[in-house]
Image (tube, rainbow, N blue to C red; front, side, top):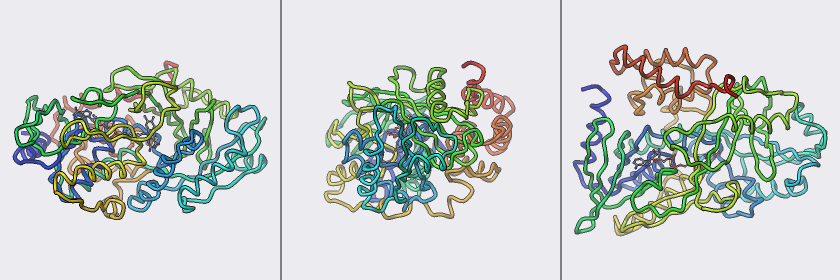
Length: 492
Ligand SMILES: Cc1cc2nc3c(=O)[nH]c(=O)nc-3n(C[C@H](O)[C@H](O)[C@H](O)COP(=O)(O)OP(=O)(O)OC[C@H]3O[C@@H](n4cnc5c(N)ncnc54)[C@H](O)[C@@H]3O)c2cc1C
């Protein structure tokens, strides 16, 4: 039996061989957060994920830990306050994945929304909602100061700018480190396992049927409670009652030298905001917000998305003259919003936790930033039924993972490409495919200068680690490059 199948089989046997307290469905940030919190409170908890961990929306976000300044404009003070507090908590407990980042928000006379005087009040309110302890103090910039700060910014009609602080993270790493911590606290987890259905037995125990997608067989798991955190896939889960509205958001990665900004810059289009986010030697541009009805397992950026983002960026930075040829890579994700009407950008990003059966909670909506709080609320709700009392949540105080376990492995700017890192991802972080390492464990695909060569090197190391034959190496490389090579320059 291969190393992968062996590890996989053992994880599932362990889960199936006992009565679980809690089974979590979905290995995105929400499921990972619930698993860790439950394990830290002493529950016998397990999680199944149908793809790789963080395969879904949680590896395709804007990578921000933010209160959400635009939610202020929508009057959603509760969400901003909640997310602002969480942003600070994550900066404290997961500092390696929360780098303070200044945002400059320029305003223009010919802009219908986003008036300077309103933003001046807004950023102070933003700091206040952080208890005046935001990651940096907000500022007001005159027109001249804004241009000095962002020399490439369009100067005509510019009225000034405000500057405020949020944090940059690495979304997929946040998921993986949360899962590593959960595992270290005794939780069980298995990827490539799809939850199919559950029936309640006399006595209240849930019998869950899952499909092992690697060995192509069904397995029964028994649990006292369930939490489903299926993100955009929730509508396909049994008993789900979430009124989901799916919208797609894409990001483009370009070279920092093509748009050399040191602050993140807020760019607007009507009421919508987009960002240019400095990420080491790259800039991340995004995002879009369009209704989505395609295949959730294959969400891609298309030419319309690229035109839209480049057009808005070029309108703000005319001298940059960005073209599709500047794009190094892209990613696209789907927001599982809770609503069925209205403009996608106007729909609230807050979460809901609903009971869909006895001791069965379903979580929908929410943000990466608030995942710890969402998990805390969900575990708080099931704890009394499982233990007869409340057990205090410790995730706001305990470091996510010991610092020594992150060096050269887990960071916002990808670590150097080394065999040691690849070996770690494969042996300790459930990375079994080339794509798992290149995208979700390391982000190398989006960052290195020569992604195709690095992919070859990584594939050859993985071949040694997992004893892959040449045909498997070729298959992995072909699949990865076909799915991820950026064809923007050629087609758009
Ligand atoms: C473009 C974009 C930008 C964003 N930017 C930000 C940002 O900057 N900051 C922020 O805070 N938030 C941001 N968000 C929101 C944030 O990314 C999401 O709220 C969050 O990632 C959702 O996590 P999740 O765990 O609910 O979903 P997912 O990450 O999608 O995880 C759900 C998982 O469940 C699995 N699953 C589903 N059904 C089954 C089944 N039957 N069996 C087993 N597994 C199953 C799926 O495979 C998937 O991996 C952004 C979202 C988008 C789309």
